[in-house]
Every structure is written in C-alpha cells, then in structure tokens.
Image (cartoon, rainbow over all chains, first blue to last red; front, side, top):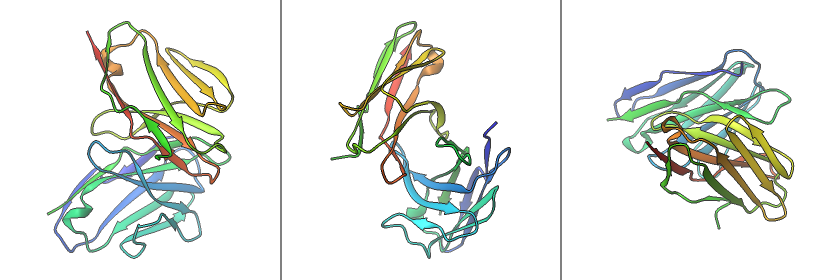
Length: 115
Length: 110
C-alpha cells in the first residue's frame, strides 16, 4: 500500500515553456501532498504543501506564480512550472501523507531539464 | 545552525558489518523522526519511523531516539552491497513540517 506515482518521470523542455507534473496517490486518499525539489548531492527542499480543495502553502522564497500547484482531488496534485528557465532544471519529487497518519510516501520523482 | 544535521560521509562499511548513522536536530518540540533511503537518481523510500525514546527494530534496521540529547540514529545490521545508498534523516518539527538532513552516503564494500 501507500503508492505514489508521478508523471512524467523525465521531461526536457525549451526555455520559456511550461511543464506540468502530476502526482497521484494510487491506493489511498491524500488530503495533503508535498512538493520538493532536489539538486544534485543536496537534500530535499520543500517547495509547497498542497491541500485538497484549498490554496497551496508555499515556502519562503518559492514563487507561487512560477510554480503553480493544484490539488483538485484527494488523489491528484499537479505542479506546473511556468516559463521555465535552465535554472529550474532539477529533480522534482512529490509526497503524500496518509490521512490520519504522519509518515510521508514519495513518488518516483520527475527530472526536469530546461534547455 | 541547520535544523537537521547528518555527517555527509561517505561511510564505508564492510559487507556483513553494522553501519551506524547519526542525526541531530535543533527543534526540541519535534515529535516524529524518520529514516529514508535514497538510491542515486531515485526518490526517497521510507525505512522506518520512531516516536518514543529508545529503540525500534524492523528487520535489519534499528532506529534509536534520545529526545533529551536531540539525537536519532539508525543501525543497519549485516550490511549488504544493496544497502549502499544515501540515508536521509527527517524530523517532523513543532510546526508540522518534515525537515530533512543532507543525508549520509553509505558504501558497503564486498
């Protein structure tokens, strides 16, 4: 149980375009999902907390207009990187918290490369 | 001061030996503590979590928590080459957010 999927697993896009990443909890409902990014050999940096049916809560320094998050259902959250630039190239990972639980389960991640 | 600190390693461990990983945290209000394993290029996978002071065992893994010392550790018994990975300590602080350490790289040598 507690499986989280992400799509796509890898994406290459041109500078200035937008990219949407989907995060799904496959066998449980997740009222709360989290989006992280990770640079090589660095730890995970929390970008935002996504709550079903309400606006996401962004961490300090994360541009909400650039990283659009939508949590439309109890099993799906999306992250859209708008007007992507090469510095947005990173490993984006979502996680979901089992309702009533404390542990978080991670999706497999999406490697974004902006050329 | 970082909120969650780990030695970056690499920690070299002979196959069959015990790997000992340490983690300290700064938020005294932290209640939940997690260990994740991350293989290169992959996302973290949960190994185990602990809430109470003392030891918690799960297979070859033992987590140890000492809240007074703000210290949590992970022991890996009978280390295998497949245990070679980066181990992330994560602490759920008093604000409810999971804070990650930078991770300790473990290399198990045959």
